[in-house]
Length: 486
Image 1 (cartoon, rainbow, N blue to C red):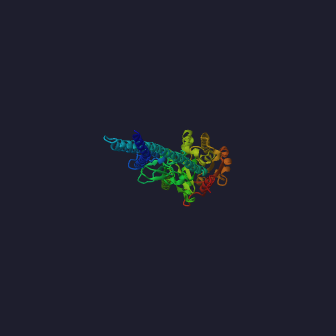
Image 2: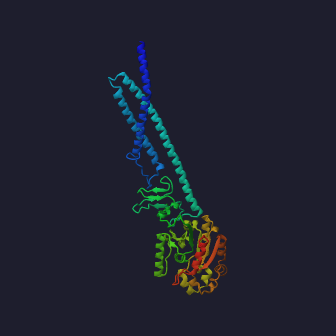
Image 3: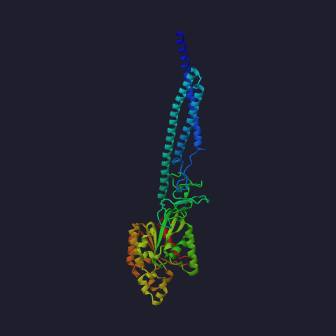
């Protein structure tokens, strides 16, 4: 009896001494196997069994990795790791059953199997804890990177907007005249037809956005997004070249029908592209100017401005400035409802008021019947004082700070008024002539009371072999200089 007790005590001691390394070994082995399973699952989740990235509906760009795909990859890694670990657990279970717990196995082997099973269970618990720590760590890293990316996103946007604000840069659509926060851009890949409504840092990229075609594009103006073809997000019209990189100067032409606004605008454009070396900032501007030049050469007239022609600005790149000149139809100035629809008036920096001297009652009444018959076809239907009051009333209603803008008053058709007795002294003192000679004192007072800076010019928009009237250049230079162009 004593011998049996000693024997069993000795066996128990041996098993106890063997159980520790067996349990530790089994735990370590299972941990290693599960670690391998995790590595294989990670490789599969990022490779052969990667979760497809869904294409955003209506947005032809790939979502930034931290804004969605990273989370899906982590879930896929967890799912594949769990699958691999279950497979390892089933293999271990089958191995134990076949080696240590099948029929006919003696008690010693069963005892060893129990210790190995205990080790595997301990290994499974340890593995679960390690995997939980790894998963939590991955989530924390992802969260930290996501927060940093969001911070960088808003910082980049703020820097881009801040630089534009400091430089006084605003975006105006030359077609629909809306203020544009950020233009839409066509993909720079010539073979791709996708258009991106907003490429700024966000869900679809920080420094670069990846188009659905695989082409990468910059997300900020400071990174070169202005080199891509830009479009207005409101009306899809092409923006002027240089939009977003150059300070804009918006100059609407004011005046009645037949006052000579379109001729004056063309004279300003010729002066700008000729003597000031500006360039047309977009294809519509170049095409329209070419068409008007052809019409002027063919029949001596640019044609009447119709409503459709007034929709788009004539845009020019002049150094580090983008100049938009608008030529609305004269009918607008006799109709407040139509004038209110011209949104570009709200964004104006300067105005050019074209005054037809033959529309001034005192001038017209001084002409003999023959002269009146000759000039009737080119005479404005509304007097300039009425046109100005209409414009001023509507600009005030639009809450435009008129006092912060400048006004160039151009008494035009100087080639036709030369020699008329009532126009004596007009060349030397335009303001005095309007104020003292032809009964426009009320208009002059209203002009000078309303606008911050005013200057008067006597011009003609007639084109001769010598070129454009030099007074047109004086008018243009004065207007641009008031807005920072030297």
